[in-house]
Amino acid sequence: GGALLSADPVAQLVTPQVPSQGPYAEREFSCAVGEGAGAIRFESYALGWYVHDDAGDTVVVHTGSIPGFKATTGFLWDRRIGIGVLCNSDAGFLARALFQAGIDLARGRDPQPSLLAFHRLQQQADRDREAARALPRLSLDASAAYAGHYRDQGCWGELDIEHQGDSLRATAAGGRAYRIERVGDSRFRMAVDLDRPHPAWFDVSFELGDDGRTQALRMDDGVVVQRQAAA
Image (cartoon, rainbow, N blue to C red; front, side, top):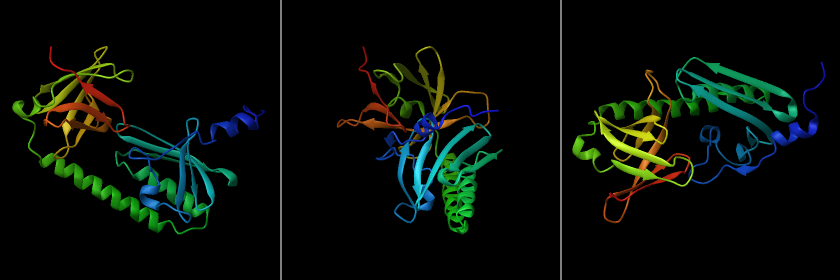
């Protein structure tokens, strides 16, 4: 069979469109490999793919997950080498570590330093998770500081947060429900409210005003949902 796409649209797919920078940068590989001319730089988002420079080589990559599974696939673009990693594990760094090891081996580089760096990150994540389990759960009085009606201008629309058991429940417009659990003194995670042992989740935080009252909920992608004044 012939090619499905000509060279021009393929090039557009992997042409950087938006730099990945600032406090919400992905840093999916530079968090372990490091940043700079001899490591990873120019991290950007293209059309469905993340693109970065790894010591002179262009790497095109995409990650994905569902509860219980992680995947990373990508290319050493100019060398026409593809690597795919599928893991039946919730370990957040495992698929990325194995993908980076493949990149290192393809470039003739020792993979041990990046594997060890990802391993340390996974160990820290595991320690954070265990520490979160030891935290006292939210009481009704404590959760009252966060409960209320929230609104933004696009991503979420309306969001109602209320106390439920030892956590918080957020209900979006349309009735989709999320669970919000405390994972640190001021850190929370928001999970799709599914009957699964390992639901997909993302980090959130509550922003306080000068009076110490909760004013907004900030998502890990930078979206801010403002708390509305009580009627």
